[in-house]
Amino acid sequence: MANGWHQKWLMSLMIVLFACLQATSVHAELKTHQIKAAYLYQISKFVFWPEARKLVDAFQVCQLGKDRYEGTLQKMKGRTVFNKPVSIEAIETLDQASGCHLLIISSPKDVKQKTLKDWLAINQVLTVVDGAAHSDIGMVAFVLEDQRVRLHINLNLAEHSGLAFAANLLEVASHIERGN
Image (tube, rainbow, N blue to C red; front, side):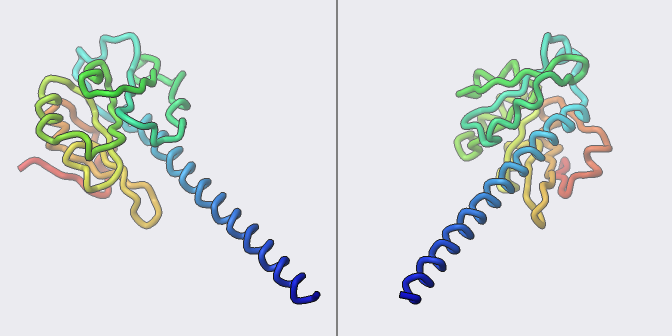
């Protein structure tokens, strides 16, 4: 009888521990999304945009593909960038992104580098991706280093699109890809 009670107690303890670990993992992931969303807002203020891109009613943040930020981008609504309210839009194709200022590419492997580079030559849109492996299509790549969100910046791609970054932003980047 004592042995059965001991097994039930141990099994209950293991279930509770597993649930706590799952909750910690979900909380850490949510916190990472919140940090990235906050970074997005701040980054947009340290980009030198062509004057023509500022002549709009709203600063448009677009997410190409699945929402990998778990809804935390919505916290940017109501804020302003160059005195324009921020709007958030989900889009399905690159063709829908021409009105965007900031384009989050959720599935970088689905976007061909040549296609994006050709598109950026005529569209001044800041591209953002997750992971250093995709910095060829993201002007800004969020990378986890030592369990912290870091920035990798691709100056080549930004310049190709007619965008530039303030020195303050470049100072916080852990990696910068420069021109040839």
